[in-house]
Image 1 (cartoon, rainbow, N blue to C red):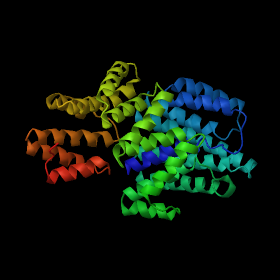
Image 2: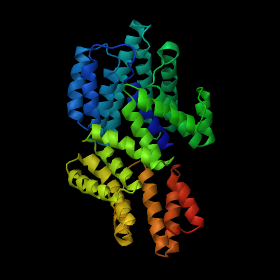
Image 3: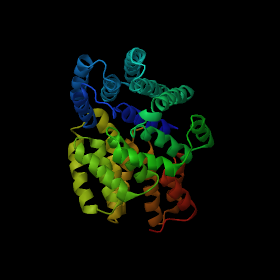
Image 4: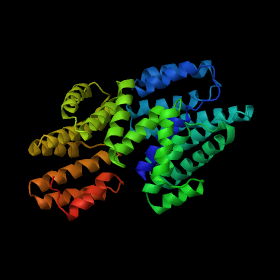
Amino acid sequence: MKLFHSLLIHAILIACLFTCLFSQHPGDLKVREGVDAFYNFEYEKSLRILSSARTEYPSHPVVHAVWAAAWYQYDQSQFSEKKVYSNFESRLQKVEKIYDSLAAKHPNQTNYLLFLGTVQSLKARIHLGQKRFLSTFYSAYKGMRMIQKANTGPYQTKDSLLPIGIVEWYSDLSNPVLKLAAQSIGLRPSRYKGISKMEISASESEWAWMESMSVLAYIYQFFDLNPEKGLAYMNTLSSKYPDNFKFNIYYCLGLLQTGKINEAEKKLEILDDKLSQQRPFHQKRYRPYISFLWGELYFQKNDHNSSLVYLDQSLKEYDSDMDVVLANVFLLQGKIYDLKNMRYEARQAYKQCIKLKNSTSAIVFAKQYLNEPYKG
């Protein structure tokens, strides 16, 4: 469930915030500049630009929602969880009133309905953090319905394919309850069709291409494995946004998954050097990811003892509600124990991996190796 809501809400946050394909709006260039700063982890710069744009272009359909989203990302890196959610909820309430007013004044411009739905969906992020799961789904559902309403007929956009594709993909990956939920809003669960929609968004959308690539790379690296595609998308994103530390981490993972060990080692050394320059929140979140990457690198070099040291370090440091990397840490740990003929320890690691129940390919492999030892 956590994975579904995080993917869906983040996709709605980016893909639908910026859907302005069929008409240009005054202030587009300034808003785009703010969005680029946002993606490049330059939150203060992004907020300065977007705050100014809100004053200069109050009727712009994008600026208010992305302003709230930028504040959320900034607050996450600075404050406690309670304060983050309190600030986010307050800003969303203000923004929702603005979109209500704009939609009433301009009933023929469905962009305002689109962003009203986006803001309603973003409330789900607050409820998720508060573990109010029923409210989380209701908010996401309400927002998605509004987004669908705003993107019918001549107003349909390529950008809207991302959140719709995610729901189709994940609901087919997940349990029957989510399949029924997707069907209740007129979507047909299908991993293949979901990915196809996201691929179109990645190649043809004006605003959502970057988030579409990010989600697809995530899928290809951890779920429906396609290392070459995952690497290609992360290469594009990390080149476009060189200061986005997360994109660089997943680009390095792509290098390892495709056997480019020398390039990966050079990239890892750069990541090590730059980690201390990141915000404290990002240092805490991404340090265990880097430890995992070192563990994977040494595994590929057949230095299993060094690999285990880094994997143990990753487990001790892990501090993220997104546990896809954690599943891969346990899986790799189990594989090494099997190669060292430590079957009991290997089985324990596989069981820890399976216990996460996050639908990643790591779970599939862990179940396989739990019954038949990994042999290399």
